Image: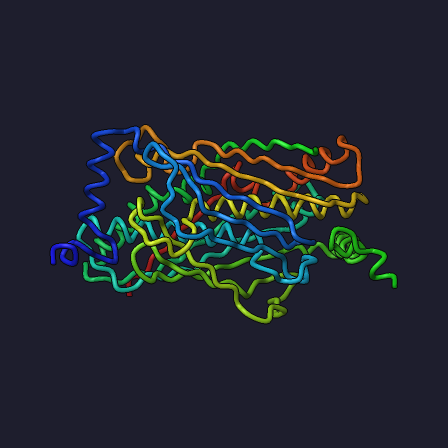
Length: 188
Length: 188
């Protein structure tokens, strides 16, 4: 079974290298657009649905159903725990992206992983976001990510895979370097 | 019922102003730490659990259960749609934070909201994240957020609420300005 033979860490490396080759041949395939639609429910409770996206010169219709994610706040921040709060969702996005990046990098480099775990912490003085002081930023002052990675490779190789993942992670780039965001409002 | 009388947009404004006063009296209450724990499952599938956090000089234990969020990738990015991808989760975090911020600001300013919806789009050339080119960043080049806000207030007031929310949103700050992130790795 050649399919099984090319799968490493659950990633089809044949498809991975095929995708890279296809994009090298036709760079227009690399243009993606991702989307999220959110609606407010009550108080700190709001809900995002995610399904459609644009990729490889067309609307992608491969997803069988939409994803639904709820957000909320704990009691101390005036919510009723209808979901993780937005800053926690950002930590999740960062953890997930670093993890997927390192799993893909390891697959491409022939490293068989057995375990990847991470804990992320973000420190915040809520005087910023609550509008009580301009001396504190609204978001986290810093984020610490601690990864535990195990696999059939020397420690040096495992560390190299994590370092490479960090250099190529989409969310790590956005969270550390920032992204221009425009906000349009209609009230009709 | 004074409790009912002070609730606006699902936010207890009495508690909101009480929280602000308490922090003004004792700024140490404003120190928060949020956390996310992630473990890899297979391929692009990984899972984050979120529950404990630090707030107001102690570990908060008010949450009855942990939240579980799955991440994945669509087929074109070598996954099996086990969840939204990390960049989509970041869009969700941003939408949720802007929404909660504007709902809280409106509650504090006496604006009764009837509807808040948003669509966020992020554009990406995946040659960056796939390591094919250094001419493209790994993350979104830009994010567009389109909000529709309705409520019992003049248009100008509604726009002011959105603008204020944007100036105080934790995730908007982080996504637009960036945050220092440290990554530690253990392989034992």
